[in-house]
Amino acid sequence: MPDQFVLKKDNSPVKYKAEVSSIGNASTVPRLKNKTGETKNLQPSPPAKNGSIPKRELGHSNELSAALLSYDTAILLDNIPDAQIEQAFTNLIIKYTLFGGQDGDKEFILTAAEKLLFKEQKLIVASKAIQLI
Image (cartoon, rainbow, N blue to C red; front, side, top):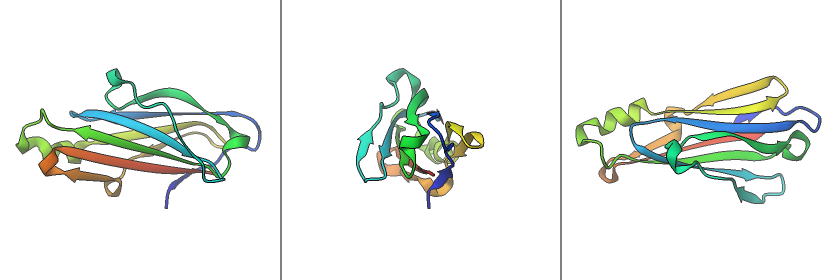
């Protein structure tokens, strides 16, 4: 079940950001699936930000009700020695923040169940979903 973010019951702006802490080379793609099921790719992380996404506007609370915000992050560990791959996976931290909710700003942290290590390929894939209600 995805995490939940409670929207205000008005036309307030809602913003989002993601902060990736990894020694690998990361890229993040956020997506927004609206209540009718249409999915829109949002602007991916800038190359110089190593997977992090600066604070950006998502939309307005009244149009985001029942939408699902999801993030997919791929982290290449090709320059990391084999002996440090497990440690890089264990130490990976991704913080997702939504701004402008009913209770103010809310931070969501990537959990162990939301990331996979493909050791042979030196790749970590992380996914987070947040239901907007």
